Amino acid sequence: MSEFELIARLRRRLGGIGADRLDLGIGDDAALWRPGPGLQVAACCDTLVQGRHFPDGTAPYDLGWKALAVNLSDLAAMGARPALALLALTLPGDPGEAWIEDFCAGWEVLAQPHRLALAGGDLTRGPVLTVTVTCLGELPPGTALRRAGAAVGDGVFVSGTLGDAAAALALWPRRAEPSLAPLLARLTRPTPRLALGRALRGLASAAIDVSDGLLADLRHLLAASGVGARIDADAVPRSALPEQLLGADAARACALAGGDDYELCFTVPAARAEALQAAAAAAATTVTRIGSVVAGPGLEVVDRDGVPVSLDRAGWDHFRA
Ligand code: ADP
Ligand code: MG
Image (cartoon, rainbow, N blue to C red; front, side, top):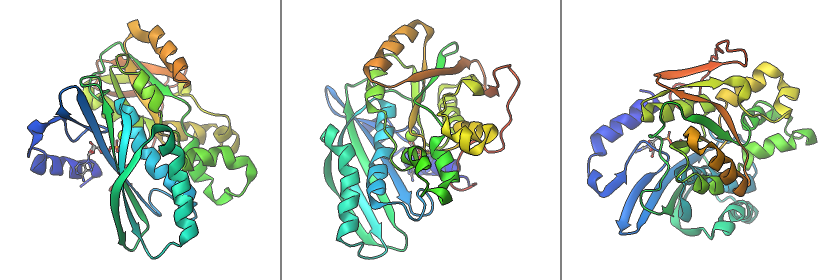
C-alpha cells in the first residue's frame, strides 16, 4: 500500500467514529474542532525520523527548530494561530545535557514569538532518534483555509522561493562549504508562513503547505477541490544558488518536485488579486503567481513557451520512494 492508501484505510476504518464532533477530519493539513461557540481549533501532528526526514549529522538546534516548524507550517496552511504543542521524543540513549539544551534553543526561537506553550509530551528510548510534535492552533470559526475550495479561473500562487531545501539535501556531503550556508538554512531551519496564512483568510479559496514537493502537494489541493491546474514551470520562484551549483535542469526539478520547502501554495480568485498583494506585503512575504486553476482534472506543467515539462519524480511518498 502507498502512504496515501494506508491513510485512506485508517480513515475508512476509524475516521467515522466521532466524526460528527469535528468540522474537518483526516485529509487536510490540520483537523478542525469547535470546542465551544466562537472558537475553532486546528490540530496537526508530524514526525521526524533520523535518516528519513533529517540526515545524520543534523545539529540538535536545527532538529528542535524543524520539528516545530513543520507543524507550524501545517497550522499556517489552515490560517490558524499557534497555541500549544505536545512533544514526543524517542532517543537511542541519554543524549547529554548539551544536546537537549541545543534542541530547546532551536525550538525556542519559533515558540517564543507566538507564546506557543509546550503543554506536555512523552519520552521513550528507542532504536532511532524520532521527534513527534502535535500542535493545536486557534482561529475564528468558519475562516480556516482548506485544501478544498479552488475554483476554475483562480490564480495559483506560492510564497517565497522553492527548491532550496532539496538542493541543500543534494549537496549535503559538501555542507561544510560556507557558500552553501543559505541553502542549508532553508533545509534545516524552515520558516513557517504563519503571518501569510492568517492574512490569506478571506482571500485564498484553498491552501496547502509545500512539504512533499510543489507538484505533489498541489495535486492534493486540486484533488480536494475537484479541479485541475496549468502551471508555468519557469514562473515558479527560485533563488539563484541551486542553479549555480546544480545546473538549470536539476534546479528546476528541485523547485517542482523537491520537498521540505514549507512554503504555502494557494489559490485566489482574480477579483482578489490586488487584495492579495496588499496582504502579502503586510505579512512581509513575497507571493508569486505560477498558473491557473482549470476544469481539469489533473495538473499540466508547461515551460514559458507552453511546451509540456515532464518530470520523473513528482513528489514524495514514504512507501513508494
Ligand atoms: P501533511 O503533509 O500536511 O502533514 P500528510 O500527507 O502527512 O499531511 O497527511 C494527510 C492527511 O492524513 C492529514 O490530514 C493527516 O492528519 C492524515 N493522517 C496521516 N497519517 C495518519 C494516521 N496514521 N492516522 C490518521 N490520519 C493520518
Ligand atoms: Mg501539510
